[in-house]
Figure 1: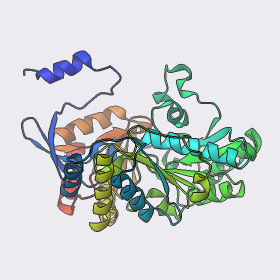
Figure 2: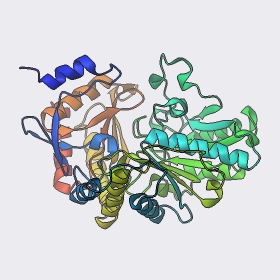
Figure 3: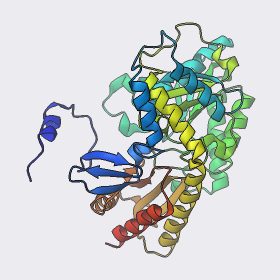
Length: 433
């Protein structure tokens, strides 16, 4: 088979830091499907890493992009534009009451770093040192300097010297129940005790700027914490007056069956980081907070040349409106529950051997594969094989997890029941084969 010229160009000119990529050239996308160079159709159940929440090229998003791109492509944040104003107002309508101050940026890593920067500024505003930030083991917050330091996985930091060693970051355990020897209650208690020790023993509460956590850990393997974990975290943080940052980069905009993941546990974060599903496929991020915290900023404390790009803002407004108008969070909850129940039933009936656990919320579902259910030894090779065989059968899924052994099921939120059944049946066929 002759190699296309552009693939030879990639081989010759791209830097060699990209992960292994699937043998698929995507030419077009519509709804829940993408098409390759030979017009073969694939059911996309990965959504560009949980980005295409409203599907590929949603007509309302495309229309918004077309209309805005014919008027204005860029101005920078030194000028006022209507799309920026419309978007920050739209975000305030879906965030908790009072969280009406937003900064617009370009990515999840930028949103996370901006959130922590604001938290540190707010600590100084209140007379605290703000030296330390509490993050979680297993977390993923991005690949920039601070965001990578916050990330609680060593595999992303190898051979980077002090680039991923931002001072003051403290990691505490996250309750990964499947891989714990403790029961649920004891595991949560242990995690809360570790958090309390970090606050009272490692440092003093006056030195903490914030706590940051993903409601569900995405890159770690779509790990869902026990229901009472975050409520206890929130209570402890309030006791010590430490702001809570909810990293909603992957869990936001309907993915978990709620508009934001923190709603699953009725949390009230102080700062919310957003990106991925926010722009309908366009690169955009944001972090939002309350008026009292935003007042810590002074003019020129933070800025982004491309942040608030008018085309991206128009796309984001159309995306949020589509999620609301088409009840996509509810669809994610309902279809996600059906998929979870089907996969769990197959796993319990031994029709899906080597499945250690099926878990998730909404359309954020992980299937952890093991070579032996008793030892729970991770099987990353099997995960890769299942992904390849799914691709051969026309279904795209992701692979991730702390040990590279978790199948990631994150389709567009517009997926219907028949498409979900195709996903489940194709998975079953791959396991049987």
